[in-house]
Each structure stands twice: as C-alpha cells, then as structure tokens.
Length: 428
Ligand code: ASP
Image (cartoon, rainbow, N blue to C red; front, side, top):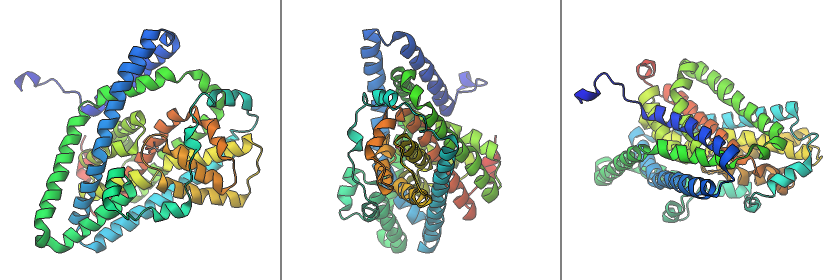
C-alpha cells in the first residue's frame, strides 16, 4: 500500500483507451507494411489477435444472459410498485423510440444533402464487396414477427437462445411478482440478488483483461481493413459518420441539457471510455456492465433505474444502427437509380425504428435487419452486398452511438424519477 502512495494508479478506462489507440496504430502499421509476411498474417493477426480478441468477446457474451436476467429481476423488484415501474418503463420506451425516429430523420436528411450514391462507380464497389461473405443477406424478418417475438412461449428456450427481448419481458414479470409477494418469496428474492452480485463481480474480473482484449480486437480489424476497400465507399461512410456525429454531439447533448441541466461536455468526457469500449467490441450487449457502472459511479444514476433501462436500451434502442440504415436506403436507391417518394421516406422512418427494436446488440446485426427496411420500400436486398465490405468500421462507430443513446435516455429518466445524484456527477 505504502509503496503506491503518491503514485496515481492508471484507471481501467484510461487503459482501455490507450489500448484502443495502440491497437489502431499497430494494426495500421501491419496493414501497410507487414500483411504480406506470412508469419505476421497467420500467427499474429489471425492467431494471437484473433484468439485473444474473440476469447474476450466470448467472455463478455457469457455474462450477458445471466446478467441481464438477474439485473432486470432485481431492478424491477427494487423499483417495487408496478406504477413507478410502469412510469419508468413507459418514459424510457418513449424516449428510446423518439430518439430513434429523430436519428433516422437526420440520416435521411444528411443522405439527401450529400447524395452518397450518385455518380458511384458500381464496378469498383462490386469488386470490393464480392470478396466479403454474402451470407447475411439471407433474412426474412417481418414487422409482425418482430412484435410477436417479444412474448417468450418458452422462457427457458429464450434464455438458452439469448433472445434478449423475451428474456427482458420474462424477467420483468418475475421482478414485479417478487415485489408483490414480498416476504412470501424472500428466499427467491435473496437468491436473485446474490446471483446478481455474482454476475457483477464476474464482470469486474473480466473487465480487468479488457485492455488486452480491446488491443487485439482493434489490432486485427485495422490490420485487415485495407484503405483500398474504403475508397469507393468514401461518400457513404462520410454520410453515416456525419449522421452519427449530429446524433451524438448535437441531439443527445441538447436533450441532456434541456431535461437534466447537466453539463453535456462533462458528461461526454466522463462517458467517453464506455464509447471507446463499445467501439472496440461493436456490441451493445457486452457494453451493458460498463455502461451501468459508469452511470452509477461517474454520472450518479441509481442502479435501480439503469439496471432496467440499460439492458432494455441495448436490446431495443439502436439509434446509430438506424442512422446507418437510413443512409443505406438513400445510398442504394441512388446507386440503383430507384426513386423514393416522400411516403417512402416516412415508411423508412417507421421500419428503421422497428428494425432498431429487432436488432440484437451484437456485431453486424444491423446489416441483417436492414433487409426488412429495404423490403418495405422495394429496394433490392442484394444492395446490402454493396455496403457489407466496409460495414465493420461503421458498426464500431454506430455501436458507440447506440449505447450513448441508452445512457442519455437513462440519465433523463433517472432525473425525472429523482434517481440522479448530481453530487456524484460534479465530483472530479
Ligand atoms: N453492433 C450493433 C450493436 O451492438 C448492432 C448493429 O448495428 O449491428 O449495437
């Protein structure tokens, strides 16, 4: 102890951020100069980076189902009466839907301004995209299915298959009933609380290796992602990034200021490590634990609220994903010379919002639910093949926006329910 005195220990979040930068630099160096060397490609990139990176993602995924299940049960039981829970739930869902619709509208406006698909050299794009697997265009998600899918006909199967929405619905009901039964179900309540504590502790343990996992994930992505794949798609990427930027730095920050009065810059600074983590892993689900912890320890949001709203947001609120989908619609329509009417744009706003609910918080799923949006306005689903090649980097960016949306909405809902400790937020 005494030895460490005076020497400031580097926080986990700082370490994650440093790993992210280091990973990107090392990856870019490998991609530019060393990818031709067999040992580097097969042993370092496809061996060490891949195994450690995927191992880390698997560890995070391992946490998700039990963590979400017990945390929602405990969250719902802690909120107690169904009236408060209902009001928190309804407000959260309204915020989530509202921000997603705004996101799609921004994406459509941006895309109409920049016109990413006009004057596109299709042959250049096709060369790039055909080298990437085309399996994810096989999908058949209808709106009705998305809605009906919320009810778990078999809760055990839902848990086993990681059906997040179904798990949330079931856990919510268990939590509400536990709160209602009080002492009669004390044993089960204690069991759930202890399971929740175990999952939180496990999360802390796994997070200790996060800097290494992040370094390997980013290192591999940048080693493989040659700049050549990006050039023909540059305008599309710029449009998506611009939409994400507006949503993250304008829409969220205004909402935060107006509804909570908190300083948006301070919020952004404190929340940045969570975004860096989401960026590296490209999965909202894996970011749930860090998001809840950061909101509690640095922003002052009570876990009572966040343990319910963050997993819900990671499952149904994907503003970044819907921005990509909005831009993709305009891009593919322009590339294929298909005219979209104002009614089509309205349809896209509605279907992309529903697609956001149906998108699981894991890498690349946004591309799959994009088929549903394309279908709704008669665009060829094969158009997804055009953007597949460069989707990984955009997936990372949009995931960071997805989880920021969850955190901002959660902070607002916490404020409205007197569950925001401003003193914690103001602490340096
Ligand atoms: N990777 C995104 C997330 O986890 C989902 C997607 O857009 O593919 O939030």
